[in-house]
Length: 296
Ligand SMILES: *Cc1c(COP(=O)(O)O)cnc(C)c1O
Image (cartoon, rainbow, N blue to C red; front, side, top):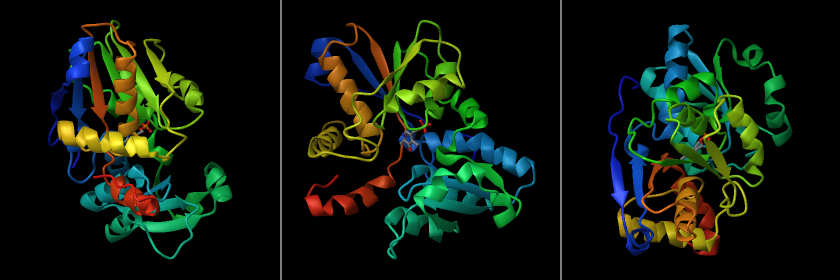
C-alpha cells in the first residue's frame, strides 16, 4: 500500500492564453498516484500508518466532515492494511448517508456522529477511554509525520513556482521543505479567512520562500459557484483532467487568473500539484441537483 507510488505523471497543459503570456504550466497528477488512497492523502497517511503498524496498533481513529477526503482515504488505506478504522464525523444527522459515508462504511470504518460543539472540543475528549487503544490522526491528517512524508511528494525539480491547494496547510509545509532557495511555493486557500494558515505553516517550516493566496475561496470551504463548475467542466473538456470543486478547481482557476493578470514573469515554469480528492464529486453533485448545475 505505501511501499511505492503506483503512478506519478507530469502533464504540460497549454492554450492561447498561456502561450501569449509565455508561461509554462505543468500539472503533477497526484490524482493518479494510488487507486485506493488518492492524492495528497496517500502522502499524508503514509508515515502515520507505517508508524501505527510499527507500534502494533490495530485501530486508527480520526476526524472529519461528512464529505472528507481524509476520512475516505483513511477508511480505504486501513481496509487494505487490515487495520480497524473509526471516523468521528462532524454534525451530520440525517438518516441517509452520503456517497462518501456509504463508501467508508462498506470499507469497514466505524462511524461516530458528533455535534459541532463536541467536534470543536475533540482534542479535550479522551477518545481512548471510549474506544480503547488506538492511533489518533488529527483532522485533515496533518502532523509532523504527514509533513515529513509530503517532503517527497514533489520529486520533479525543474520549476520556478509550485502551487498546491490548502486545507490545513500540511501538504504545503512538506512541499516548502523540499524547495531549492530559488524556488517559491504558493498555497491556494480553500477557506475564507485562510490567513491563519500562515501560522499553521510556520509551525513546520522556517524558510520564507512561500506565500498564501486567499483570493480564490469562492465564498468559503466547499462553497461553489456556477462559474467554478463551468471552469471545471471546460478544464476537463480542454485538457482531459478531472478537477474536484473543493480544492483543485479553485487553485487552477486562481492560477489561470493570476497568469492572465501578469502575476508571473514571462518564461516562468509553474508546477501545480493536482492533490486528488475526486471521491468528493459525487457528493457535491448530489448537493448541486437543486441548482441544476453538474460537474461532468
Ligand atoms: C485534503 C486536501 C487538500 C488540503 O491538504 P492540507 O494538507 O490539509 O492543506 C488539498 N487538496 C485535496 C484534494 C485534499 O483532499
